[in-house]
Image (cartoon, rainbow over all chains, first blue to last red; front, side, top):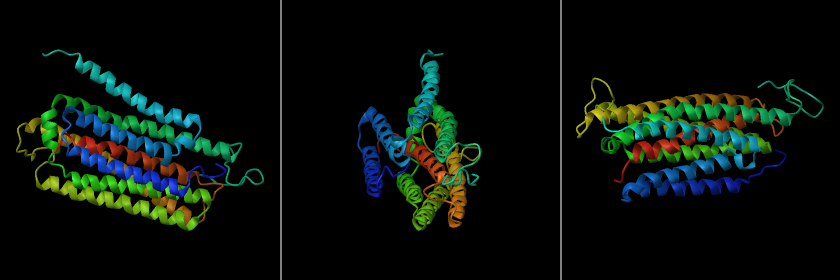
Length: 94
Length: 219
C-alpha cells in the first residue's frame, strides 16, 4: 500500500454509522416486530460486520484473494448451519 | 516476524520473500486463513445455539431476559470503539506516526480491559442468581431444563470470546512493546496490520453474540 486508501475522517464516519446501527439494534429490541425481530437484529448485525470487514479490515481495498478468503469462511459456516438444520427440520415427530 | 535487510531499499524483508509486497500479502493471507478457521471454531457453538434456540424458543427468550442488555450494549459500544482505535493504530503505522500508533494501541488495550471488567461484573451477577449451569442452577421460570441450555451456551460462547479477548490484549501488548522500540514504519508494519485483523474478528464475533444472547424477542 503506497498511499493510504482511507482517510482518518472516513474511519470516523464508519464509526458513527456503527454507533447509529448499535442504537438501532437496541431500539429494535424494544419494538414488537413479532417474528421479524430476529431477522431484523441479524440484518443489522450483518451490516455492522460487513462495515468492519470492508473498511476497518480494509478488505474493500485488498487483493481479491483476501475478499475470497473472508467470504469463504462465512460460506463454510453457512454450510454447517444449513446442513445440520436440514437434518433436524426434516425429522418428523418421534 | 523476522526483520533483516534484503535488497537495497527493501529493509525488513525475510529471506524467503522476493519483496516487501510479497511478504505483506503473505502475512495478510496467513492471518485470514487463520481467521476463517476461527469462524468455524466459533461456528460450532453458533450451530449449537441455532439448533437449541429453534428447539426451545420460549425457554431461550425467557432465559435471555435474565441478561442485562444495557451491560451487553455497553460492551458492544466498547468493542466497536476499540475497533476504531485499532484501525487508527494500523493507519498510524501506515503513515509513520509512532506517537499515535502507541497511543491508539494503548486505547485499544484499555477498551479490551473495560470489556473484560464488564464481563466479570456480569458473570458474578449470574453466580449470585444461581444461573451458572450445574448442580446449583436455579431458574424460576417455566422451563428450567431448557433455560439451562441457554445459559450453558451463554457461558461457553462469551467465555470463548473472552479468552480470545485476553489473547488479543496480550498480542497488542507485545505489539506495543515492539512499537516502543521503533520496530514499525510505513515500510514494515505487517504485525500491526495482522493483529488488527485478529482484533476486528473478535469484535465481529461479539457483534453477533449481542443480539443472539441479549436481545431474543422484544422487551
